[in-house]
Structures are given as C-alpha cells and as structure tokens.
Image (cartoon, rainbow, N blue to C red; front, side, top):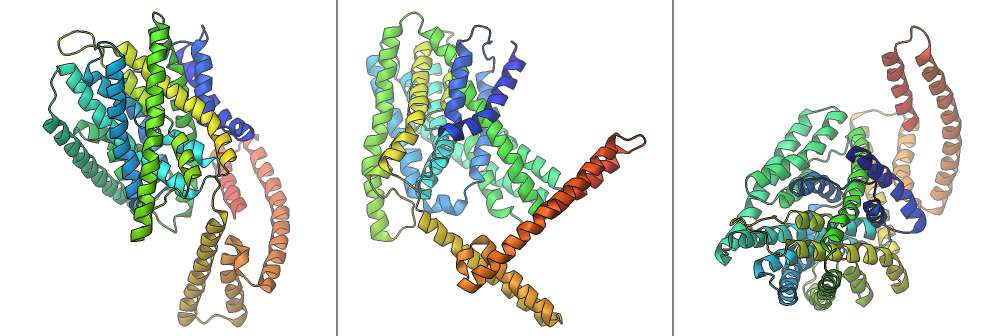
Length: 528
C-alpha cells in the first residue's frame, strides 16, 4: 500500500464514520482515531510521511473556519469571561503544572523542554470538543463555552510552545521578550485577520456567482493563516478573526443559493478534514511505539503521571472558576452562558480532549538545537504527548456519552423552543409589515391581498405551528397535508421528466451541455 491509497482509505473512513458513529452513539472523531490506530499497527500500511510543519497549516484553517461559521462574535463577546478563564488562564496553569511535574520526574529534562511539553498538551482540541459535544444533546451554553475554549486556547498554547522551543534550542530565555512576542503575535494576527476579512467581504460582493464565492471562502482561511505566520503573527488567531468578520458582515439574507450551497460544501469539507485529522492522530501512534521500544515501563509511568496532571488540573480549575463566574453572573447580570450545577461542570471537565494541534506540535519538536546537539529528551516528549492525546481522546471520547447520560445533562428544550417561537413571530411580523408597505404603493385586488395575508401568517406557522390559534393551526395543518400530496405528485412528475431528459444524453446527436442545462432547471424546480 502506498501513501495515496492510505489517504483514500482515511477519506472513506471519514465518510463512513459519521453514520456508524450515529448508529453506535459514538463520536466520529474517536472512531477515526481508532481506525488510525488499527492502520498504524498493520505491517502493510506505510508510515505517514507528512512534514510536521505542514500539519497545522493544512488541517487547522478549514477546521477553525468551519467551527466559527456555527457561532458569532456576539456569542464570543457574551462568553468572554468563561472563555478567558479556560482558553487563556487554564492553558497557562496546565502548562506550568505539567512543566513542573515533567521536569521533576523525567531525569535530565530541561525546564524549557518541559514547558514545551506542557504547552503542547495543554489545549483541548476545538474540533473534538465541538464534534463530540454537538452529538450528545448538551445544553447550548456548554457547547458555546467548549467551542469558544477550543477555538482560542490554541492561540495561547502555540505561542507558549514557540517561546519554550526557542529557549530550548538557543539556550536563552527572556520573560520580557516572551511577553512582547505574545502581544505582537496577537496584534499582527488581528490586523491580518481584519484586513483579509474586509478584503474578502468586498470581493464576495463583486463575485455574483455562487461557485466563485464558495471557492473564495475555501481559500480565505489558508491565506489568513499563511500571511499571519509569514508576518510572525498567530495564524490561528488570524483565521478566527477573519472568520468572525465574515460571519458578521458577509451574510446576505437574500443570497439563498450561495448560503445553501455554501453550507453543503463546508459540511463536506468539515467531515473530510476532520476525518483525516483524527485518522492522522491514530496513524502517528507508530512514532510513540518506536520511541518506547527500549524502556516501556519508565515512559508509561511518566505518561500516566502527566495524563493525571492534565486531567485533574482541569477539574481543580473548573470547580472554582465555575463558582466565580456564577457569582459574577448573579451579581452583575452578565449574559454569559455558564454551567448551572456540578453535573454540567463535570461534563465540561470530561470534555477536555486533546487532538490535532497537540499531535502537530509534538511532531514539530526540532531534532537538534542551535549547537548541533540533539534536542533534549525529544523522544520522551513525543511519547508522553501521545499518551496524553490517546487517553484523553479515546478514553474520554468513548465514555463521555455514558457520563452525559448518567448525569442526566440535557439541553433546555423549552428555552430553545421558546426562542424558536420568538423568531417565528418576528418573521411573520416582518412579512406583514412588508406587505403593508407594498399595499401602500400598489393597488392589490382584495383576493390577492387576502392571499398574501395568509401567506404572511404561514411564514411563521411553518417555522413554529404553535404561534397560531387553534383554528389557524388546523387550517395550516390541512394546507400542509394538501401541499405534501401536491408535492408528492409533482415530485413523481418531475422525476419522470428528469429520467426522460437524462435518457436523451446518450442518444445520437444529443448535446450533453444542453441536456445538463435542462436537467439543472428541473433540479432547481424540484427544490421549490
């Protein structure tokens, strides 16, 4: 088997893992990691030869962009305090604790190398947290915090990692320069992200074709990441800034086809790239196994201790952090989404899975220092990092559905339904208001005006039938049943038409381009 065949197997696994995971009640990223582990131990499967420095730029931009599309700047702003406590403060605390323990238990491990180890295992993976939590029916407030934490913790961890690696490679460290690098990296990233977001927004307005607009959105995350890194900024923060800008300002309410097609394309990209990313996590296991071939017992012990530190530091941090956030929320009427009890706090704790970023940073640890000497304890760092990744991702990922069910943590469906009703009422009122504006400038016949009034009401009823009175609901339900019957019959008629047109494609003298054009017309008609 060659590398290309392996890539196709992983891509196929990414597609299949979604329905299999839904049927088994298991997260697709965890299944892909297990698939990667199985492939890694098979003799005929080649080792993955991807330069470590290409893993993050290749995988993270589309994953981050896809995750940001599901949220908004308003949501981040409302949850800035809990996100800061998790994505910045907790990453620092975890890095310090892991570095102190690793420096103590691993003989001869320099402090700078220990800090690099702490930084690369500190950030929970944004894709794993979102993919796992999103399938379990958790309260939206928890999913929002986990998404925000996952998206911003990589920024902190990667900067800490680069500072520690530079100190270990050069043998010099300056707290002043490290702090200055952190600030400059953030400033450059935000500037690049805003500039590219503004430019992409203007260019999207000029590109009227949906295909070109979607193609541009596929390129923008990579451009933002690469440009920021070239200017010594944070590529992750630049992608987040660009994505948030476009989510806030590039949305056109009337651009229906681009929105529908864009969602479909990005769902495909998200599924495939997520599958490849977590398959890579499992496939890279051979590096850790090769490292441990000489002294299994010591490495397993060190890895176990670091895993315990990573897991329990998160718990010990979340308990007071949740209490503090709750007190601030109650006393100052903040709009933050916060855990409402110990059960939700425990679920947040167990959702701290490591993944793609940790793998890429572990593999990117240099082989040598500036003096030409081997990087201190590189093999030990890689093995411990993979131990943390495997335990948190596989063990926590597989047991999180059971834990959520056991604790009875569920989404607040009443609150979600109430918000849906509010949106339905808002949509119906907007439609009625626009109808009155049209009637003020156009002379509509009475029967047409009455019909449009009913259509305005139906806009809201189709979103949420509960907003109407009993008579209107019954009338709406009757029209829905009638419409379903009409659509069923019309669907069969359009199906016959499509079959007839498609059969003409293989007839002598038929122009395939014209056939495809007519077929697209019938396809669009079928969506109405």
